[in-house]
Image 1 (cartoon, rainbow, N blue to C red):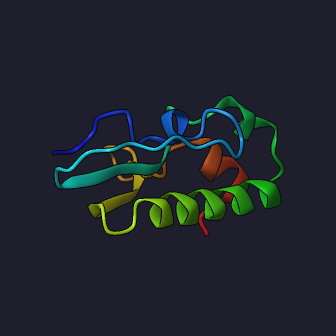
Image 2: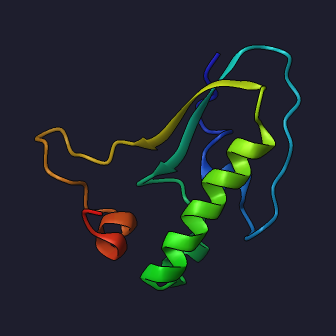
Image 3: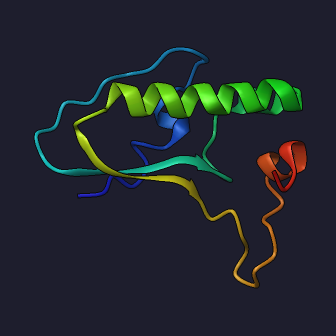
Length: 98
């Protein structure tokens, strides 16, 4: 089973630092930790350094929280457009190619 939207950042951490738990005994694929869409609006107000820090914290916190309950993770999803160019997302704009 792969959750469509429930594991995306906007659903997991709608307010900064406030996560919700999900209880499910099935094998789950974590989809997705970082995506160009459906991220919380408060990310838009962060500097590049703050964004880098909260991305790392978000990934670490969510993966730690669900350790042993998620069989695989999509960490970054759709970073590229269909033509192979980098997607013009908040992450590309503020963090660049690195």
